Length: 211
Image (cartoon, rainbow, N blue to C red; front, top):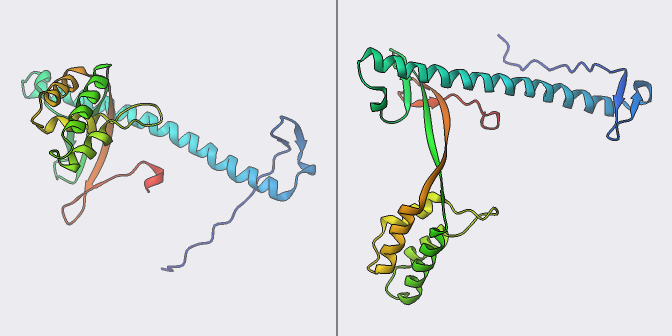
């Protein structure tokens, strides 16, 4: 078998009429060949991409429905309450080579209490600069740095609660962070994996940018 890659032949299909950016209808006989080529390739690939995107959306919806139905039936077969199911929904093949799972990630937000916690922690840092390690100071500054939309990274803010600085203001700030947090919504991700001969799990990538 030849190992040479077969050359791809591009067969351009011409339209009778082309629409320019201003909406004008241009007859094909006035079109340059390079513009016809650009129009064909971009239109052909984007059209197919839109079709594939719709298929992926439908497949994702099917996957979620099937896994949730699996959860309901599995718990029924084992005579347990579905509410007692802890963690993500996952199913694997009997031979242990295929796996599919739904992973739910909560997205959190904070109220006005976060500003108070920020102020308290910064006061602690300013009053105890020499007694608090630089790494803690950096964590605080990083946690309360906002993005272009004025939002903080919840995981970085929550991470501050893991440290006990011997100052009542710090402890008060930690309590505020913990009580002011609310889950805004949960986003579900569905993942498909296969087990390689060496025993490692490999994700089946459906993101074209990662293929």
